[in-house]
Length: 283
Image (cartoon, rainbow, N blue to C red):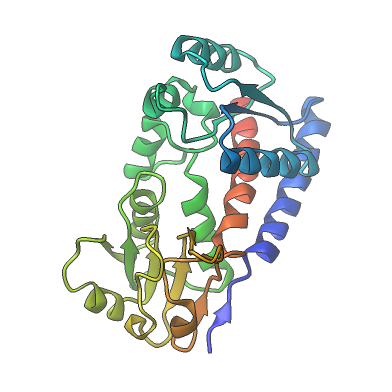
């Protein structure tokens, strides 16, 4: 029976670390680390995410503001706000909540953020630093996954790791982070042939496809560590991941639940990135 990786408990530890660092920063520099979030439109899920980030930042000793803009905001006006935030020395982190309304181009807006303040780790400059193995701001969800592996004592070195998913948000960066830790990494996706065999041969499985129960329980290797990034809502309203949890938990050594696994870690690592950015900017 697998040991559950409790994302809520681990995120609480990370937030406590961030609070201590933020307090030290305030004492040394006479101000708190600053995080500003931009929310365009009234998407219900985005509103919930932003409220959660706002509350978590306040509790962690990070000062900030949420810029709530109407859905019809023009790209020019949004870019003007980003440039204003870039130039404010009291702002260390800028996050634009995605997805944006259809008339706005996500990548254009992300590209406009100062890479030193890109606490989502999505700017091409920061993506490039990750590719070449240099220190920089890294995407929050993959960073949270790596912290979970560390927490359960799973050293990727020499292990076979399978990343299901090739998105720029999770799949590609987590594959690079695992490679950086000397894992032998395979990237698979919904069109991969013999997917079951790829899972069965893997010591670490990170599922981030967004397809409910794509990974069957009997595909999971005995003793594997399973990190399920997927969040899928079923017809009855319940949430499930990309992995058949009930089947996989009897075979894996460690597994994340959905919900309560990776999700809480994403916000915790956002806060950690904000303090990282604040410290780096005053060096």
